[in-house]
Image (cartoon, rainbow, N blue to C red; front, side):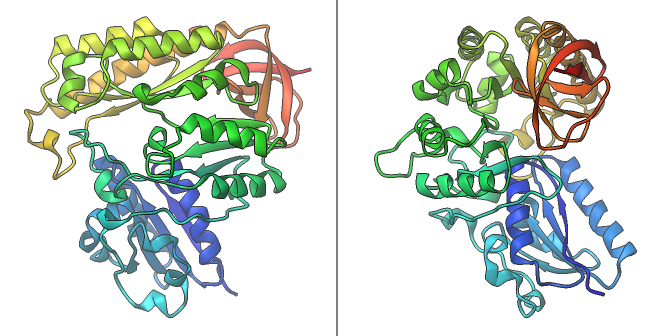
Length: 415
């Protein structure tokens, strides 16, 4: 009996989207395991290596194909692992020709990602086991933050044209998806390489007009200094544009931000948060934060901690700093690893305090929740919600009243 390809996905939402593209291309292959790697941290790479070793141990006859950012950056390292039959680059993994039975025996196929000049649109109609769909609108990054290796795994910034994005969203809505998340490596740079250089807000506005049956549109992580005026107008007045921002913050200290070579300062982020909350007072806000960046003293860390507490950011993604070979930050004076972890824990605790307070502010309110299981899902503000009793079909949007706060989010009753 044939075994359909198994896909193990690590890292970002863009990888999730690309895994579904590969699922379609590889559908006719038998006994294949695809590992879509991430290179953001050493931990992400460690987990992928561990998964490969486990897969080879459990299914020694299966052919393992490794791809994703870590494979793009250092293909030889992954090719050497037991059981790995092929390593594919980030461009090659999305090409149907890479997934023929004959191609599986051809070994490594990793081209120069820095030479990529366009993003080929793909049509995905299903995300296995998910009720929220991701749509790639952009690839690559032209910035060079000192801690980040991802531009060397993804190449230069390039945009998916409006027509292709609209076609993809229409297909997903026709398949029953009620919410779409626009994703990429640096989505606020979308449009810079297209005729007329449109901004991301224009794409969102046109999507909502051209696909009126789309119920919910959400953005993945955005750069605080690249939120354009169309996005602000949508946030303020368009109910189908979700009241949630996830900011690529990284630090709450101007000195650390400068050493990271970020393009914003703390005052810029404060302005964004204040404006966003003025547009939608119940807005949910998330942020990525790195703990223990090289040269981060106790005083500089305290600035970030104070910023996180002062801005009451409920949905933090905190990462202890991870050296990435080949990046400028890897050569800077390091903070001891145990101290990085300790600082990360303190930031997470601050985020948990902010989340509890934010969720308490939603008590008694009517929330529209996209159910991801029969009894749980997320509100428009991205608050996690669990039904106190009863159940409904996953994939539905239900109106609930928030009645209690627990350690995981909100508890609610269906109206």
